[in-house]
Length: 66
Image 1 (cartoon, helix red, strand yellow):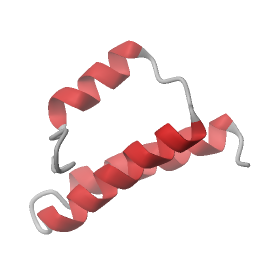
Image 2: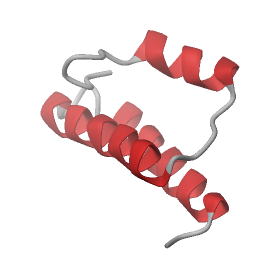
Image 3: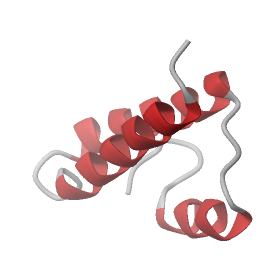
Image 4: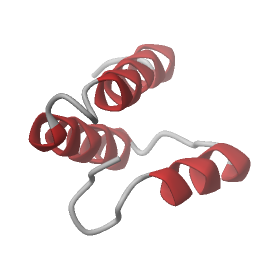
């Protein structure tokens, strides 16, 4: 299994990619947002509550769209 550092870097990449693609391709951005959430859940990585709250406010919980 990947280390926590690698998992956090992958999650950050997915998050940034979702933000970049939010306007040109909302469906792809939603997919990447959901992939980030699944990655974090599966790896059981501890994310700071401040970072987690900020992400939740910027992304739809139902569809993952930015």
